[in-house]
Image (cartoon, rainbow over all chains, first blue to last red; front, side, top):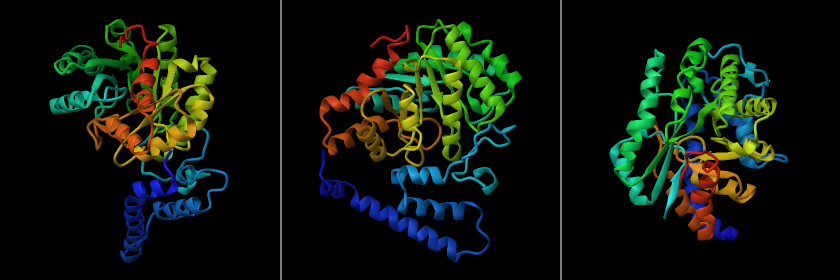
Length: 92
Length: 265
């Protein structure tokens, strides 16, 4: 198995790039007009989950932060797609 | 390197993709029935689609030396109208003896609605009544966690043999309950959603090499028909042994698919 430094050799530059992209995305949201919908706070909460994942892996914590935690089937599917985060009412 | 693509929607792909996959070492492609990107308006439309999956597409693949298999169902995105879904399901049995049909799939949930769940359960009963393996689609993005748990509950209630079921599109928050319940897990390698190559290898390293496969699920959207073999190359960079890589991209899918009476490898 690769060492930590070998993992850094493989993935550091790519993830540095992705990290800066996230920072610039948040700057962009701040800079533009209007009110952001539930996806903006959900994204910020997912970042917090990544930094403090508890007993989960960081990836698992982010995915769970962006997931619907209700347990019952919905009455009817009114759309076919998904948006990547839950409106507050569905999240529970 | 030789590999199996266990989940690809080749009806949406070009002939150049078949050529590229063959040149990369792909020997077998398995194609689940899925949503065409639009809702079909008649059961006859599905009849034609099943003919495409069982006649035309195998012939197209054979031109490149690739064996083509298919899974049949009405997908959950078109299952909201349960009456229409049942009308479509009535025509599936006449295709189940076609020589390239593996089983029922990709069934599952999309928005986790009551109707989707009922039609999913009826598909499971169809598979059980014909002693067929099952390939299951789990929902996208925010709906995946809930949908996976609903699917696991339904399968437990139906008393299926978990070794004959693969639950696809797992991610870090759903892989553990799937494997812990004895099911097979599929990881889908997508450029923009689902799972990156690096994350798929992370999950192999964290959860082991048993009852798991990788697929491209390439279709009409942003997807890469060479994703499986590219991930295998990344496994080499991560210093995995050649036999480990072969297990992930050939031996494991072969082991699961061999449970279908029509599968030959």
